[in-house]
Image (cartoon, rainbow, N blue to C red; front, side, top):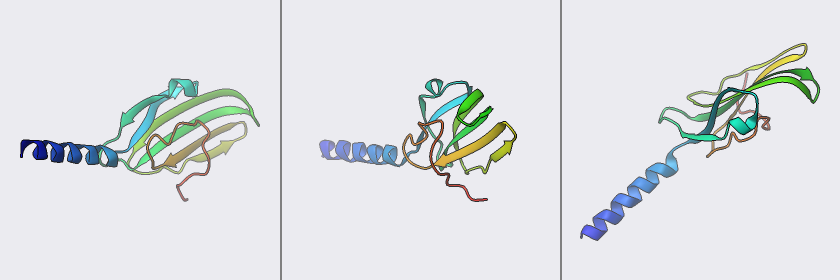
Length: 109
């Protein structure tokens, strides 16, 4: 009976972990290599968010800052002022915000 209860407890704990969202996190880093710390998000967080602020021309980036975090909503940031841009990307799966320049965003204007 004890073994059955322990197995049931282990199953419940594993199921709880499987539902948890994990995201990479960092604050205002110059390189994506500095943004590889994984964090378990709170129960109210539904998105992994990557914010990228940059100054440059085309693929030539003169200055870049990256912030990654868990969030309860997906912000819609997509600003471009001449050479400066600020963009937010959102995703909703386990450690999905690895890249500093992800694909299509989930947020809608």
